[in-house]
Length: 91
Image (tube, rainbow, N blue to C red; front, side, top):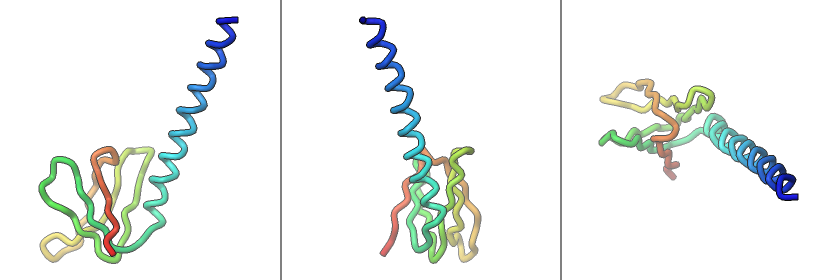
């Protein structure tokens, strides 16, 4: 009986982790669909990147975001790791 319970617990854990990963990937791909103004904070960078009337695109399978903030008057492409990036929508 104890072996059967371990089997079900292990099976439950596998599906729970897989479900969480799908939710995380779905929320990351939502960033691709949204457009507007964003402040992007990258852990370890003192600079806040401002994206005006643009979008932040996620590439979850590679683990990074791509966005085009204005830096010194020019729009530049920036890539940042998903796990070290915070994106805040600006009203």
